[in-house]
Length: 187
Picture 1 (tube, rainbow, N blue to C red):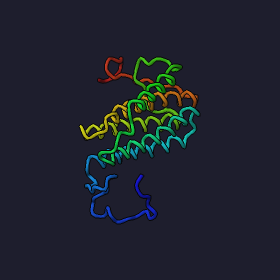
Picture 2 (cartoon, one colour):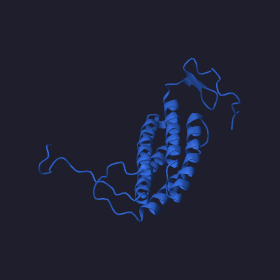
Picture 3 (spheres, rainbow, N blue to C red):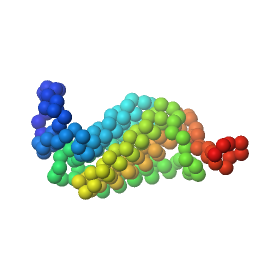
Picture 4 (tube, helix red, strand yellow):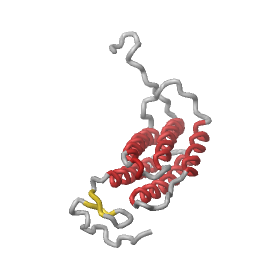
């Protein structure tokens, strides 16, 4: 790892640029900066999620995911760095999804995001994760190989975690009520 900052402000970004992990300076509007910045935002949202009352397994998984997101942000911020997030991390997320989803009722309809504090926070994290995935896609071939797959699975896991948290909070899922085709409703 590079040097650690002993002083929080450096003034080096006052000109609208920032340094990548390899020392290269780029505009703060660079798509790579947007990608790792959005992943950092996701990581912060997960920190907020973890401040809620959550099932122990969900909190444990989120802690591991936060560490992985730092790895991913570093990978994106440092062009040429060997991959830190590989297919094994994607497989781990898939195994967690399968394990947590096994006891949940099947969904026949979309559910409205919400519920208690933990479930609602997980839905917010899920949408930030989807945005991080979209931003990463803008990097195209410059994006780390398995990063997009990782974020895609992570958003699925966050959805399942929200359902698990809602059950733990004693809440019930509210199904999306279609407007079209319902008697007495305007399309």
